[in-house]
Length: 113
Length: 117
Image 1 (cartoon, rainbow over the protein chains, first blue to last red):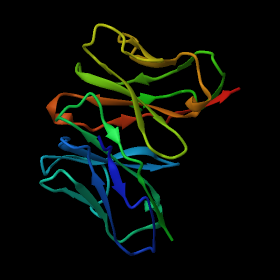
Image 2 (image 1 turned 180 degrees about the horizontal axis):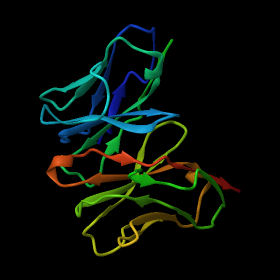
Image 3 (image 1 turned 90 degrees about the vertical axis):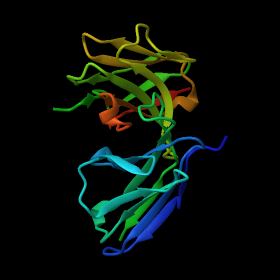
Image 4 (image 1 turned 135 degrees about the vertical axis):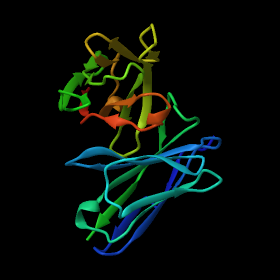
């Protein structure tokens, strides 16, 4: 059974550009959550999607957005990149609405220069 | 106030010994779940163990056990018989509430464990 797949694994972008990250959850999982991990702020929740609907949103500016498709795959987009957006972005999938397990992908490491 | 507190930023443990990683949490919600994750240098978060607030018994998964003390709001992870491959960052996390919270996890700052041969 395939795990959570995040693409790309590494990304370098220039300040002011936008970026789209992709997450394919485990087959059958309908919940996808996104997290940002930085050395200074640690792991912070961005948003969660369940059955194509955003259920929760963290305290991030509107430049951060996401969506989920009918096959449960999810994308997150960051517009007008800032240097502080450099981070490891992790995606987690759960089989149901309030899962007792959340499985993470290997993350996308974004560097903004 | 911090929702999840891990007071040990780093620790060494001798191979084959047991180690306890501390985690305290803060919530007023009677329904919550507590998670432990391992993050090796590769970056992937590996799920280790889960404890629900209503679970009567402490959770165990192989060499991992969770020492759940509800009144003290602590959920310490015990790793028995440490192996070199256990060297990693360990995160405690909490999911609060029922449906409203969904699968949103709040993480602690982590504890770095280094297993010595």
